[in-house]
Amino acid sequence: MAGYSDAPMRQLAAEQGALWTVSEMISARGLVLGGDSEKLNLGRPYAGERERVVQLFGAEPELLAAAVARAEAWFAPAAIDLNMGCPVPKIRGKGGACLLQTPEVAYTLIQAMRGATLLDVSAKIRLGWDENRSVEVAQGLAAAGVSLITVHGRTSRQRYTGEADWDAIARVAASVDVPVVGSGDILDVDTARQRQRKSGVATVMIGRGSVGNPWIFRALADSVDLEARPDAQTRARTALRHAELQTQFYNDDTGRLTLRPLRKVLPRYLPDYPELHAELVQVVTVADVERVLAPLLHDFTPNGGDSQQGAPFAAATEYAVRYP
Ligand SMILES: Cc1cc2nc3c(=O)[nH]c(=O)nc-3n(C[C@H](O)[C@H](O)[C@H](O)COP(=O)(O)O)c2cc1C
Image 1: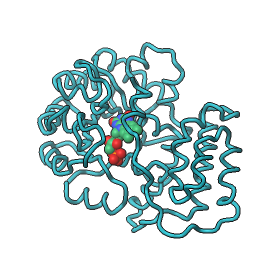
Image 2: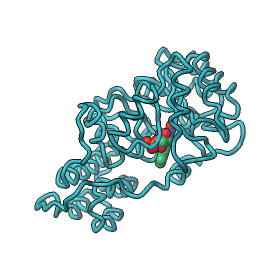
Image 3: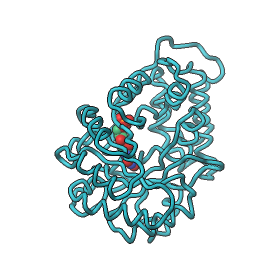
């Protein structure tokens, strides 16, 4: 997830048993032509990272092939994924979900990517641009050689509105021989299990439901019924650790730049402590995070009750900010 699934978030997810994680999407053009160190941070693994897929975004076969080679050399991923779901670029001929308007272009991209690596190449699609073409597109992608397809059960036009259509995801899963991963609106373990069972997907992908909640992976990995999250002290400690990992990974002792992207994440560890949110979205250093969370870190009195997910994301906006 652009703006979220950087190395520190992936590390916390992996520690809690996530089968695999995916980098934020990286522009193929930026990776090949840009000298921008941010591009490197987008793909850079944390020390010892494994089972991490790098996702590329683009629309030109030569650039994608070159980006695959570069990503493999620089980031040592387990596999490479093509983004066919980002709803932001609206111009035909661009990458992301635009490829759903011209799937034949996507098939040539997959072939070019496969030609540049021995790693598995996968694709992540939405149901279509403005109508559902997912079975046709998935079959074309499978014929082009993808090893796995992830389907977010919305069209690009829907962005993040409405509900993900898991019946449509099920039809894709039944129509191709490669594993299909289902994505959309999985916020708890029960939903994950039901969706997987009913749709026949190989497994599910969890996006928004894992922000501030890496324990969702632990509950799934251990097959336990863990509907409530850990107690507030554990969640506060993990939020603090997230801030520490962030500062270490970006190698910025001041935290002045690197904690900024985490401001939207920290409150999601503690949806049941709204009184802390105003301060959490203003933190600048790890010491700030520790100060705000101090009542929970050191002298914990439970607020009681199960934690709930916070407000829905302003998702498409986030997406657009990083990748106009
Ligand atoms: C803020 C945000 C950023 C996202 N960035 C990406 C991305 O870079 N690549 C991608 O394939 N999907 C991206 N997505 C889509 C998610 O992977 C996922 O398919 C979608 O949010 C539905 O799943 P969820 O309900 O579990 O979040 C993003 C979604 C959000 C909300």
